[in-house]
Image: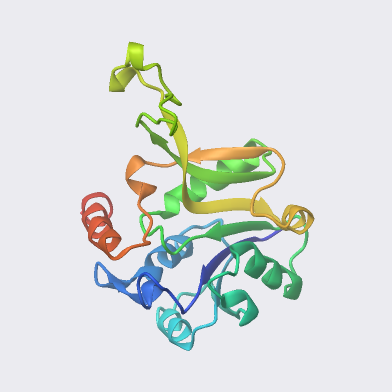
Amino acid sequence: MSTIAFIPARGGSKSIPKKNIKLLCQKPLIFWVISSLQETPEVDEIVLATDSDEIEKTVSNFKFSKIRIFRRSEENAQDTSTTESVMLEYIKQSSLVNDDIFILAQATSPLTESRHFSEALYSYKINNYDSLLTCVKNLRFFWNADGTSINYNYQKRPRRQEFEGQLMENGAFYINRIGNIKRSKNRLYGRIGIYLMPEYTSIEIDEPEDFLIAEKLMKKHQLN
């Protein structure tokens, strides 16, 4: 049984040109998640799914031993293409078996560390989950557009230290098995587990200002 990490990385990006290889703390954005996976002993192979010669060349220059390049089709590299479509394209062309573990990891979550992957894989296996996703605890109060509160009683406003909050998907990574993905055509399936990550990992690189926030967080939590 193998554990494969899969990173989708398109060349085109509307909000931030060449986002995946834009420098973050003096390294291309995509370097950080690959580096963490390279250092995760449970991960056997890292598959970068890209349509970009520039991204492929950049990643190849990292000289990581686990990395493999998968050239995704033009059809599955459009703005409207889903992550699931390129996952299924790769799985169809691979020799993976149903029991192999598949980690969908996002380059846009650079604060994900190798310990997060290891701990999540341990939880996934020991709890016999079908699939798993990462979340952070959100301690904000939410409201509906009609003026009704969603997750607290405004007449009995709790103190922050007493408030349970809600779990928010942070998009860092997802764990599943090949057979489940083939069956459901989705990154999640069946009995779903949650791996809780630190609040600062909620940052996802989608807009230019996210790079500034991520740099400060990385210097505080990872590069100190």
